[in-house]
Image (cartoon, rainbow, N blue to C red; front, side, top):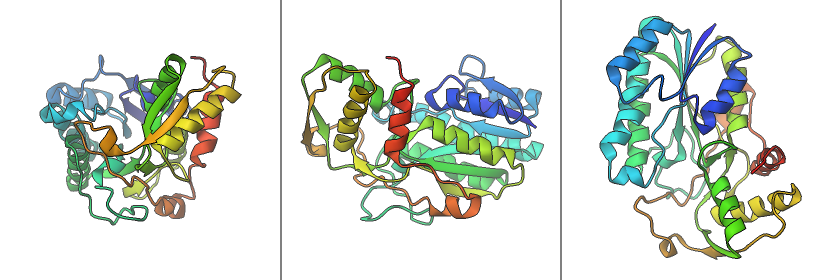
Length: 288
């Protein structure tokens, strides 16, 4: 099995590079080697490598910045997945792609299922939804995994931002009226590798996120508690709960980011652990 991994230097890509190296011959490409914003170079690279599996971990993830540059977000999150899907169909390869809870508006009072109608609130969410549609329309064998609140030891994410700010300040204000499930990149990568190793898998869209739920405020408090337990912080800040209206941002976020992952468990027999388990294990490995 020959696997092409895009976005290999990103927070998810670095974990996928580790997990997929045990599954097959891995061509792991970062942005300097494979820029998804350059369509012809992308096509040429895929044809030169001729993979049997393409794992697309590259994405435009600057949610607020995307409001000012939607074309850049569309190029990487929508057009590039469509190109990868077209090349996967030509090669008879499987494409694995990652999407987001931000394709929903968050108005539903219960966790979102794959059958719920997307209604993204932001340019980022619209670009990710467009990427899903490009892949689905391509006719390629594909798996799309929607996940939520992704974090890890690499790259920029909420956990790392909280740890930095927590060392600098005695008090923090964190939004408490948005709910979701923080999902560790290592868990996503390991489940991806287990599925790729099966070779024969069903096509389709699946929700894949950590079990359980919390708010950003609850997540922040858990980060500090676990960091102190792991010896990463001597003193933790006071975390004040605020509303989304108290902390306006260029891009609107869904109030409910919870994803129903029962279909993935039913079809693959796989489910991610509770978000607190992931956070504990992640910080046990951390050296900040």
